Length: 538
Image (cartoon, helix red, strand yellow):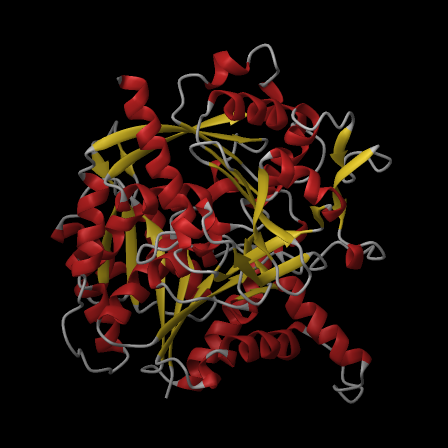
């Protein structure tokens, strides 16, 4: 029988529910249990696909093409197991499902209400992954903070779920804050008490409290929290600020969170968690033998979460190369032909990030011209790859006015064009080329050298593609299509022959990089940047 763990948050947002959920899942997985994590978000959007990155960070795309919350990226990076559409549910999807059922007459004329209809639909989604029979434990992270109006139906659904499943089959972990008041020189437990009180008012007694704090929590404070919040002392877990999110599983193991969870779920302790590979990764991450600077050129750089998976991919690839990758965020709107050298000359490599729309695109093109001419290692992702194609068309092939039809519909040279099957689509959400697609690699290319095989799959999120009418011109001039989709003939990877590292991918490689399997293109890009840095030093 599948067991269920619910992770709620109190006091404030951004305490790290996703990292705690992923860390606990990693420890349980390391003990031999089959675990998955799902995220329930209280906003009314159907999914994050139409959200501006400034609103909610990056949109994470799964193998099956679901546009999901960025926390699913943490789940995959920690567990090295792919997620799916079922792992991310929003209020919007819940209400949409209920309204569709009402329109189809499934409620037999009943008045449709939050209780029981909305809560029943939430519970149905909570059980979907458990009912597959693939998992011993399903962890459900509830977005938002206890007390928010929009999260009330989810909290009520958890209350009902826990009552239906029984105390040993469903538990609640509440993540809360223990602030340190410098003026008083004390850690304060009152916010946690109030947060738990709010949960109790909704009928939920948390089983475990994970207390986020910048300072260590003493035994006396733990006893006080346990007394006022109705939990055992060993169920008060310290979550102290860490230098990296990858420390958190080991910190939670030290706090015996996994043991406490298994005890409450009446599950066998099995073996101690095997975290040797994780410790090896951390050792390489924290003890680099070299350091490089990579410029991330994008237009959402004010919010690093907009590029979360890219940043984590650099961490994975850096550890693999025993190299500290310092990422410098550079706004593409501030780059012009006359200042590109000033902005970029100190870098060891440049990644031009994905995005949508015209804002900042010329700065990306000017960046690519500079790194192409100066032989600086370059990696372009999605729009970054398309900008590389535009720049090469304009400045090498002399295709005056070369552009993407996303920006200029009547371009004289539409080297990037809307995909044929996208031209009649008007709806925005979930209608792009999404999810995993095949790609065949040419031997003797940088892409083949990175992957070490001819057939790969990668995840996509785009409407525009390389215009194959120009392919021969490009290849004759030295920009080759080293990766092609075998079914549609879509160009997936472009690279320059006579350049130390100049690779652009139409897909999003950052979505498949994990601690256990750093993405090969990031690994090779970091290695190329290290080589470039050595030459600069000499």
